Length: 359
Image 1 (spheres, rainbow, N blue to C red):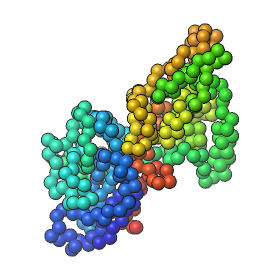
Image 2 (cartoon, helix red, strand yellow; image 1 turned 135 degrees about the vertical axis):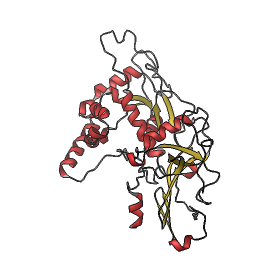
Image 3 (tube, rainbow, N blue to C red; image 1 turned 90 degrees about the vertical axis):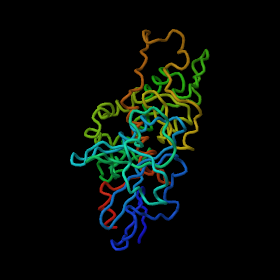
Image 4 (cartoon, helix red, strand yellow; image 1 turned 120 degrees about the vertical axis):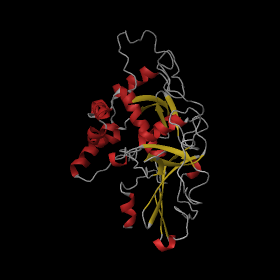
């Protein structure tokens, strides 16, 4: 028997004859530090598949629920990170609780019943524990290994590319980032007048608002501008909003945040979905009980200044860009095993079986 860990996949290969007398899906697991983010999560979703000679146990997703995340919301998040299966394998997929950690015991030999499968519309909080992901076909539920999407953005560091032309574009972007549009900075400050998540106000004073400790945070990162062309196919709506330097450095792609919150936001440790602020890891983003995106302005704008006055107030944060940021949060911190120690989002081969059969 050989044991391998490849990012979010536990793989055991046994010769067919070694499987005789063992329960179906029997797998052994050697405890190690291979699941780096296990302690950050209290919900773990596993998939599995089998071939005549090989067994796979795949970590599909995981997170910390903080005791409030509903089953319905979790299903919605899984919908965002899973690739829709081909028509030949399409069916109703669902998650069901496992009695034990599947790395320690035999995987279930019988399919779950409809009674224990979590209902997609349930508003109850999802309970901590291990879950299997199943698809309903031919009158029964079967464990599956779904394909998980990869994140377009894998780092908030400046993007380097292979071609000389792309390197020049990245270099130009770096200069654009260093010399940000000062008008955008002023417009975002005036529009928001405080941190949109914590509510920390820009203190009003006679000589002008005090913005100390408050920073303009870009939603789609300026440093990811070289990746914008890929959005034309993957997410056309986002592409149209950030496909030029003027569009990407625009008030609709930015908001005012407290300095520490800005760091968590840039690292995708917090995200905003439908006006609700979420975090995903137990020790990630210790921002307290701030759960809603606040309406601007946080504090009164300077006297005599309004949208109908001589200065126009910039449009609010674009909901489509916030949604893209949130999807990236899920792909960084919820999909598969989460983030690797060096901070890069984990990626797994699109063809897990082929990757392992030739390793």
